[in-house]
Length: 160
Image (cartoon, one colour):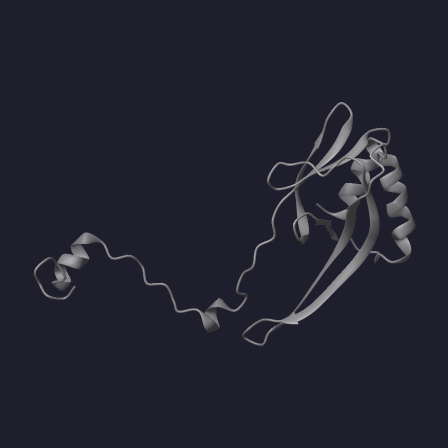
């Protein structure tokens, strides 16, 4: 989800609560606070030496002991408005940083608007090799049975 889409969603439902659902379908306790809005820039090279850049708007969710606290969508929109000084003019994908058993950054997979809440459904990030053509062996296409028989690789041929 992009920051502009998120702002529009919050502004369309200012009186609804703002909730987060983790990838395992558990909800972040509804008394959470957003303690940081950050413009995160990452410059890196892949294992083949090619440079890359990535940037996101990261929202840090934090749970405190004030169990009566509720974050309304309109209040969250106001926090994002205050963050204009640190966010670039161009649109960014948003991620939610949350500490459960470890601190993780979660992309937003989808959202749901219920009768009382705007809910962001979070997903997992995954690692990947960005230079597969350089460091991963090419995959051989699977052999079909007629090809196996034609090469003499069959039971009793001694090739297996």
